[in-house]
Image 1 (cartoon, helix red, strand yellow):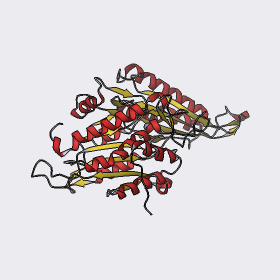
Image 2 (cartoon, rainbow, N blue to C red):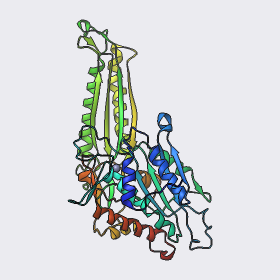
Image 3 (cartoon, rainbow, N blue to C red):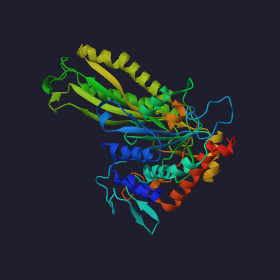
Length: 422
Ligand SMILES: [Zn+2]
């Protein structure tokens, strides 16, 4: 029996939306389907899983459509060995939850409405619409004579802190092509921009702080025989606020963002087990949305110094075994693209825009630009106003525009007939 695979972006979008890939659920059914489709057209995909519990339930997918034509210089080796360079098309396979949202359509069944000429469903905008475009263009890519490769980088669990893509990046860092590290000429991250071109987003770094004191009945609280974990955690929270204000007033500013500085917030706290007991434990979490990695490292250093110089000595006067642990949690790099880079200019030209923008939330773009040093832009058919909400949608007009743009970009970067455009 042969499976009949989708042949256009609408059919692909219908298929992809039908896989419920909320981050907590496995993305393997989707990834295996895409892998099997690619195998049916003669392309081998690599599955790159993570570690721990998600190893059996989630995977990134990496695909290379190798060059078909000899590269321009005779000194360069021929395909398929030469698979560095070319264009990366990047997107995440997971979507955000739908619980508690008032959908007027089934979020996991694609619905088309003529009234606004939009496709409705979870992930249509963020960002299965882009994946559908890439997959629908696969036969076109395969039919093009290519002097450079086209790569697909489909990740998992982007929505819960870019947890999947670091494994793919590590995999790519280990790849060597003729003794040289893997690289590419450009990376298009198809996150929602309404087909505008964005070249920046903040990164994030999160920490959990665990404070351990000594419990006692509250009637004996102030006798110097206990150590109140909540009190000291509160002291740390206020120190974090002081550091946050200093970063706001004196730190690096980038006026392209609505919030132009790195913002620091304590977002969670829990401690104690009864109002009449001096608490032994208190833990809280805080984060910084960074413009530069150094800002996160400095904040961590400043807080650690305060713990060692001020908080711990005070705590240990009351309880010798008191501890404060600052544990670094999920983090991903900021994305600072280059408007003057030829790749950005090409993307702007193909999107018919004169200026670039920034994305307010996080994306995976920083991994490609900062970690792998590959020129990167964000542009995709979804629109920010529809994402993560009930009745998420993407318009036919923007899907059509994305098809044309991705096809033209791939042609410019990889076509055998158009060398030297970049
Ligand atoms: Zn997204």
